[in-house]
Length: 140
Image (cartoon, rainbow, N blue to C red):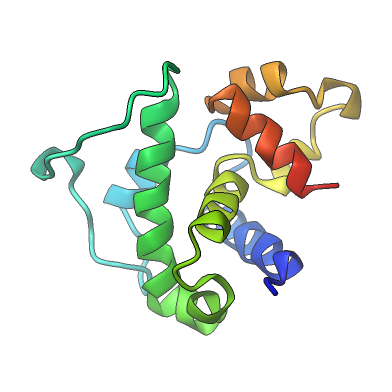
């Protein structure tokens, strides 16, 4: 069984190390500019990317965030936090961790709880509404 509290803590640490204080999370810039001890730089312009079209303008950000998550899991930073063991290859856990990255608990908690609705979270964090809804479900 996955320990989601440890995954939340890893994202909290990541947000702190990158000094991110407000949404949206710049996943493309982070992927391209890793901190020392993270992963090798990934230049998105050198990749041939095919994004599944889910009918949402923010869907490509989820795909980029999943790529970032896969880099993060297997990085020395991720190994130090046991991410390969906590997440493994489970697609549902990878998606949950991706949602945690895109909508970090520490940033969400800065919003009034009355604003914790998928439409508002989607707008503030630049994520599809279904991912915002899935993220809120992880916090219950």
